[in-house]
Amino acid sequence: MTDDLPHNPALLPAGLRDLLPPDAETEAASVEALMAVFGLHGYQRVKPPLLEFEDGLLAGTGAATAEQTFRLMDPDTHRMMGLRADITPQIARIATTRLSGAARPLRLSYAGQCLRVHGSQLAPERQVAQAGIELIGHDSPAADAEMVLVGAEALAAIGLTRLSFDLTLPPLVPALFEEAEIPAAGRATLARALDRKDAAAVAAHGGKLAATLSALLLAAGAADGALAALAAAHLPPRAAALAARLADTVAAIRARAPGLKLTVDPVEFRGFRYHTGVCLTVYAPGRHEELGSGGRYVCGTDEPATGLTLYPDAILRAAPARAARARLYVPLGLDGAAGRTAGFATVAALDPEDDAAAAARRLGCSHVMTPDGPSPLGTEG
Image (cartoon, rainbow, N blue to C red; front, side):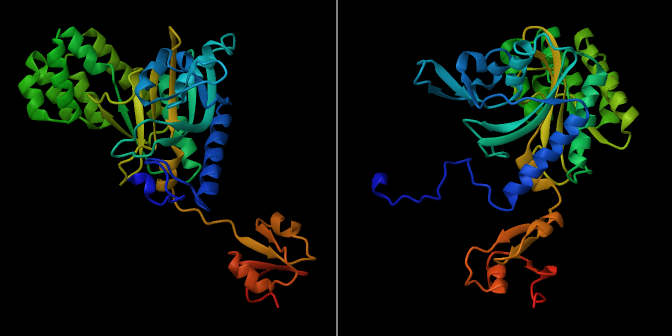
């Protein structure tokens, strides 16, 4: 029986892991660098709790995270609680309750950990770090563009400058289905075909939408080509309005950052189902995992909002390697303050019998403090 097998204390549940030195420090520094840029753009930091009552956590936009939410019983109130799977719904709750009277547009930022019931094939982690921004109370292409522009600046602050921002319109395909009166069974088949980028299945099952959907499916790529395909598609009114909004957002981005790489996938609609307009996903060249994602949604019952969530774990894997802080061994009787001022992490001796050079090597130090100041190992004598 499995109960008789020896327990390995280092074994963790699938999708969970320890972050060890120096990666844990690098991630923390990266998060603070992101948050510093957010703050410079007027985004004020909030800190929602990891755990909330289920009925509040899964209200509004939170309903889309229900299948990914761990639940447990509160022993004090005997009410069900949930561990957040995404921070954006919590920001929406704060904006509509605690900050309902704050001036709009409201700009908020956050950083924290989320826990999800399931990982995915491309992102198997179930504990996910998030750092993000939400702009609440304004509906415009300029607001949508701000998510891309601030995100690009924040990622550049930690060395990621070669990025691709993939823009999507999750409501576009459902709008086309509705305006073309595609039956429910046909919608499910077409949705699967679009999700798999199966052009043959789209042509076979698209009916009167086949030509339009096929053209849009093949148009995914550089923003100019995709926008041209959308403009030429003779879309019905609601879908045409979405396409025009996307074109205006791209123009607003290029007006301030013409060098950013922008791609468009007109028929992509995966992700949490609370998005209502222009959305974005951030990628680094040569990597398939998302560095961030976000987009437009409704905050509360009717307030327009947009946001961007960055994923520090993925960012850490994509960012240029950072040199670990040099460590300085400080023998007993010497003060390490000057070393810390010089940028070293100081490691104080605790045993008077230790040989300074040997202890420094054992503890991963590159320098030893001497009466004359820090000296590289081998020159301290």
